[in-house]
Image (cartoon, rainbow, N blue to C red; front, side):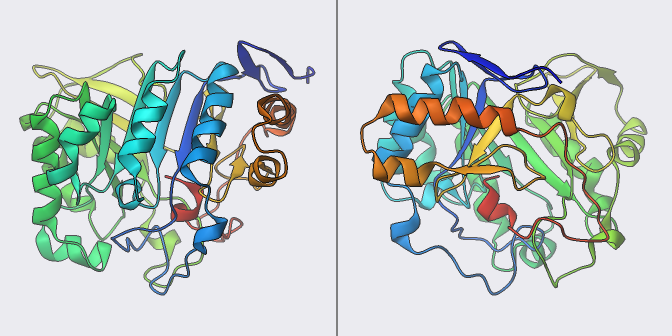
Length: 335
């Protein structure tokens, strides 16, 4: 193991991986209740524990100064955060930031897509795990599929650089929709990523060891219909892509359970309460909220703390569907 190093232009961990991507959660709250993401009876953080817009902006600016070139806004559902457009505008104007993106459930996009584009958001990922209205409602507990489909249509209409769909696949529940979801993406000239379920937080809706399905199994289904050409193209995240021959679409596979992407990890996460998570599947973290509130406006102290934290970024995660080692839910983790 070599000692970690950092300069004003980059953050590098002790394994030589350069961190240039920040996933920034703006809220732990959501207007859906997806079974794999949160418990049915959730308790959300008190408002005063959530970072303010100014604190989010100051933290993002520090990361950009240190070499982060891509920021993804996440939640919960980021569009329910008050004044989210103000935050998007302030982040999009940060000198040195190449791309500002967002992951959303799509429900609010019919009215928000154009303002987000105007504020400087360049790309958007939209989560959709089923194309069957009753099943979609069961998965999300409260969701209306038609609202999400309208959101996808709105996002496509305003001319984002790219609209990508995300689908978490659960064996015995929605794995029979893999081809339908892929067809939907290809027919609409969009990309789609299929995601293996991760054991984050205790849930009662299903036993995760029973719903595990691997990216290889999903790929086998897709190969029945699509000519998939493996691609080295990346959007900076964990998806491994294959181009769909005869179309403009790519299909991605995010495989945290069967084929982890840790060796090329280039990202860290900031939770809505200001906890800097150095790994999705570990609890190594730093409380940036404490620093932000104890030393407001001290950008150099903030950056120094971030640099030092890189030395604690672990080599990899170890997920086991049989047990929950990480008690925080995905809505607390930040997408």
